[in-house]
Image (tube, rainbow, N blue to C red; front, side, top):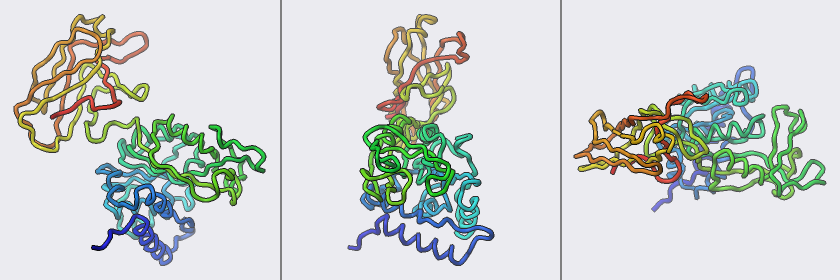
Length: 380
């Protein structure tokens, strides 16, 4: 029985394909990105045990986001593995060839990737809202505001594959800061004569930054110089950290997607609803009967304005039995449905009371819903 090819093997094959295309099609007035972007796949291969299906599981059915895409090598490779859609973003003034390379390769391959010019430091707006996998390879030290970008990605991506330079020693090697959550700000042309380089983190700082920006690191490793001898500026002290991380901030992947009437996530764990709010669930198999379950917290501030709160729901437009709640704290609303076919199901909720706008807060506040742990809305 023949073994399936590993990610490393497939990445190497695709690199050769792209190299042949680049050799045969030089750019006009510019040069192709000179570094082997697909070398990152070797490390990803190690994280995933070479299993292509594990990578496909990370991507899921959601789009992929390639941040700082260079010539798009990694994006085109993931597209060849079946990624549903890929958005590539880069900043043309700092891209090696002003994004001519990625646009040319898209034409040569007949690719369907999306290409977007975005300056993440000025305005970190992404082309989509929920990505299965985000790539941030060799980009973090080019960002003036790395915390903002990482947090933005955590709110819009379920998984992250990241690489960046790290350092333990200050230039000259006299100060060892590797055990501390510190970063070195390089001077204009101190690193590779490139004034687009900014922050080089210690490994300790990088891991803390990821955690505070909403990521849980699942796999971590370094390549290049020994981490204990790494520094932020010299070629011989160049250590690259690679990691896979899972977001704590993005909305649940398989449970439900948010409709109208939800406010921003607070304290990385819960959201207020408005008086009317909705969600969409994916039901994978026919349910007969079915039970809708909604877990929520009823704040005492709501009951101070309304002695009891009636919560009603409708499933694909069909009203369900309401329930009344008169105590503050955790509650469950449940309603029976005779049968439910597989597919997308829209659930609309309404409470007959809410905290009215006031005191500088213009929101109409209904109930609190946790986004930590088990899904707050489910059908079974």
